Length: 379
Image (cartoon, rainbow, N blue to C red; front, side, top):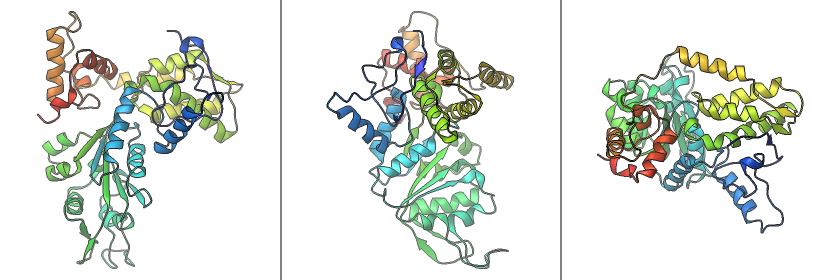
């Protein structure tokens, strides 16, 4: 199906899972969703509600809907959540969506990037310190857990925590208490913990860099955020969203997006996921003049070249057979891969990577073969 020039409609917002309007047909020029004032207004109201529910999360693909369904399920509880996914997929947005739908939504959401803190200071940042606890500790200081009390604590890149800090975090999860650095008094805390990582924590446990007991405490309710290549249906929405947002910031205005740009965006692999797409769009907005937005083909070509220089992925084991789709061999290979990955399709430990096929293809074959992924999760 050919992609034509895409017309930009001003003032729309795409957040959460939007159903497409009947007017949006690629063969009719990729017209974006417009709210028909002659209708009852139900769709418009639902769109606004969805924007408030999942602010900043753009898309309507099946893969994203599955993730958001899990957000809805776990948000009202106080269960610990472990969000996994590649870099640039929007894990913090998922964490904020959980907080916003929780009973703690009117309390503090504290975010800490564990990879950005020096190993010698991370315990002080998380748990605070007493006066004189170390050189330069001139006064008592509250840590992030105390500041988050009653609310939600988001630990991004949790796989980067030093082992001694992992012990203290385990105590918070088990006993809901901790001690400040240099202190002896236990401090009780009421906080929900959401952690995120792009690392394979099970592999980290196996090689001794991550505690197994902490992993199981964090992995109460795992959520896998799909990579952008598994959300091809969302690329048009995302491009339009980032074009309008970037153009507004620098005072530019575009009326349409070039057809070739959309073709390039749909064919590119996006190893950096949504963050990479956002950066390329912003860079192109700054450079473009006129009323048509377009991305220089060389920008994506150079990205492809850099990626090919790094070589192919290392974890590739088996491809699907070339015989008739739906055969016994195909079902067995897919089920074996799902069994080995405990039902996980996406990510570095997912079945799609093991079989060297796109995630979207893997999902379509699972659906066509009527395979239930859930049956493999606890084997």
